Length: 123
Image (cartoon, rainbow, N blue to C red; front, side, top):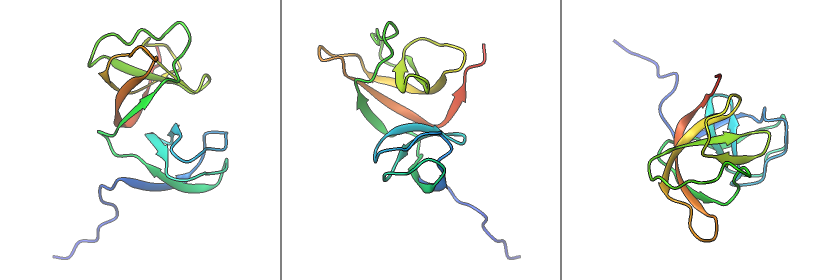
């Protein structure tokens, strides 16, 4: 029996940039259901390629003011689209996007391992 593959797991997905903002190459975002990183500059409402694989580790110092302890390896990491920053505080409207690999260093930098999908926090 012949089957036809409609999709297979891949690292990059071409989707519409529905974030409401222009994205720079390597900028983190939540697009569709994915915790994603833009592969290129992508204008708002244009189609573009996004790196969506789970397990990608990245470093950042874009942290929500007052929600930036990040002292426990393995703790959940949240994304505030409004602040375009990461938080260690579970808050309604934020997305769970990964887990802390390296705690915040003296320069305010954390290392996050992202999940494939972003989970909206509703409570």
